Length: 97
Length: 282
Image 1 (cartoon, chains in turn cyan, purple):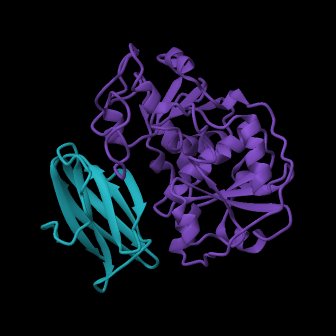
Image 2: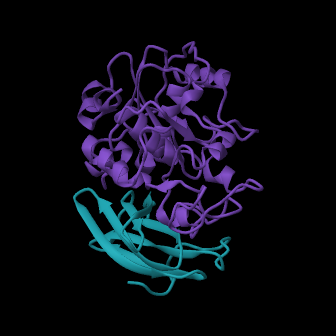
């Protein structure tokens, strides 16, 4: 769920005042999934960005203010999650497939 | 060209990837993907270190391209099958490049690395080496590459297609959202450019939509097929994907990729810029 940044990827070195960061992990039965694909859709459902998760299941987007959808894909699984982002904040999301 | 002549699917690669005169080439922005596992037999091209000039902002010239392909063991007669991450953005960019330098037989793996992975197909970590060749490139085919002055002259005259995400088009974001928000000096788009995000041409798994869906997509967006068409994005890789759709799949011969794209245009002094969701006036 969206919550504190504890345990998340370090944001050291980033200018957080300019960025609306959405980051977190993709999990299957609570276990991080590396090399899953996470795409960020904007408020109208249009594709904005996509990346594969790291070996530890992590992803990070530099979004803008507003509502977004995270669409996660791995072999045989797909899940959507809604997220609200704002400049100057870091949203942590764990997506369960 | 048509879809059958420019695209292959994973089954074709599984069957023919090891054939003589077929060379699989993975093209990535981040080549750690290749190093972590690639399609068996594939060599890699690094979008930045292999395909861009190390000093000037430009891509490698003819001699550098010849040296690169010779070193990777690619011959003029080889059938080159390109694939990569980011929904084949960089593979499409490399494809455009192979065509620019006159390579005859180039193909894209439909869906690229993502579909291969989502289908849980095998990846290899074996080091791939091919014997060096003596590749000979042609002079660059500038009928498929646009430069900034031509783009400025195209405002209100030719068809400009901005293929970035809607938020980049409007000026609300300066880069794709997986990257920090920096680069161009200004946000927005080239006046009169229509917005057709590259992603509308692809399915969720990265494969290209059908010919009819693609025609409908650009038709509904108001693309004037009779005018010369210039596609652009931020650095020219997503617009290479759209160039591939328009020029190679839909067989429109009057299409150029503006690889300078928004990182160049959005930093030029004195050029017109439109912000917001509408194309704007010339």
